[in-house]
Amino acid sequence: MWRTWGRTELATPERILAPSHASEIQDLVREAAERGSTVKPIGAGHSFTAIGVTEGVQLRTDRLHGLMSVDRDRRLATLGAGTRLAEVPRLIGYYGLAMENLGDIDRQTIAGAISTGTHGTGSRFGGLATQVAAVQLITGTGELITISATENPELLDAVRVGLGALGVLVSVTLRCVPAFTLAATERPEPLAAVLDAFEQRCDAADHFEFYWFPHTTTALTKTNTRLPSDAGLAPLKRGQRFIDDTLVSNELYRALCAVQSGMPAITPMINRTADKITGNRSFTDVSHRVFTTRRTVRFKELEYAVPRTAVPDALRAVGQLIKDRDLRISFPVEVRSAAADQLWLSTAHDRLSGYIAVHRYHRDRDTQAYFDAVEEIMLDHDGRPHWGKLHTLTADQLRPKYRHFDDFLAVRDRLDPHRVFANPHLDRVLGP
Image 1 (spheres, helix red, strand yellow):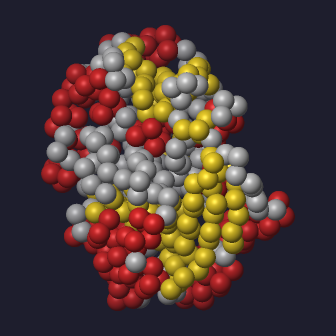
Image 2: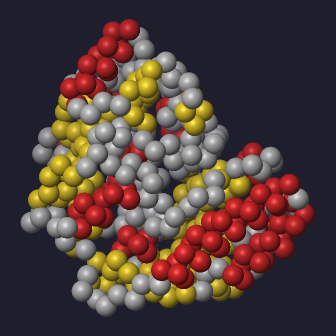
């Protein structure tokens, strides 16, 4: 039995295979096409949806990992599609390179992260898929093709956020940047003031985000400033990092979530306590150590992209919802932004975007009603759901949100005519 990290979905595939070469995958795909079966590539299982569920062949990409080549002059690095994001800084850092931006979790594989539109924060920086210069992909007919600016270029904007619907990614070529450091400032601030100045804060910083614990009036802001790699470092001391990021943010918080899950009435008190003991520090470190944070408390998540201008009103509406319905929400709401891009199914396609993510502890029982109500708010603000997070939308609802939706479906017909990579979730969001 296979389960997602957030324990939101499970699957019992007929076979689980972990090939290490493209030729093995080609044979598997051709066999599945002949039998009328399905193949579903799977990475780290960090999506919360059923996008990776299959009753056919589950193809694990763990052995498709590592650095394959580097072009230091052009700042291009080609890695196996199953490489975990956490491995990338070490692999490319040797060459003085870094990924331009990262999210706050790095457990995902490169293929899974780009395929679902994973993003970090920073209004001048796109999602992870915008860093992709080329891919090697095995189609639903077993053909191995390269897609780049010079080979099959008409497919590049489709496959970079491909939802696992177009083929099996074998390798990914990243467009890197020179290694850099980040000066991080984390501060509690009044939520109302942060919302009033949200767009200005995003524009003024390289990377700005904040967390808001429901039942409080404080935003825990995070502002990161990019510096050259030779800037002096002032990292968190090992003991402080252990206390802040392991004991408080994970171990203590896990215990508190477990208690409030059985006693929801104490949630506001717990949130006010968490509000006071987290988010007040400054440090400077290499980029990936600032971008990413270790997360071990399991949760469920719904996240929507809205026009950046809509973020303050949308978040205020979420706060009013929690108050009006007297909900008890322990997990914080995360707010970020990203630059507009041209990737066909990117949630930031054609617009400067803000992201609002709501979470529930994975053992909480009343999650769906909260998520449904938040989803209504996001849709009222022209929201697009994150492809790897929980949502209820169907193909008919998604089509008007993406002007290249039908172009994507045409590429799917071309690359996977027999629907070797289909599953019920993709049938819902893309159509059969």
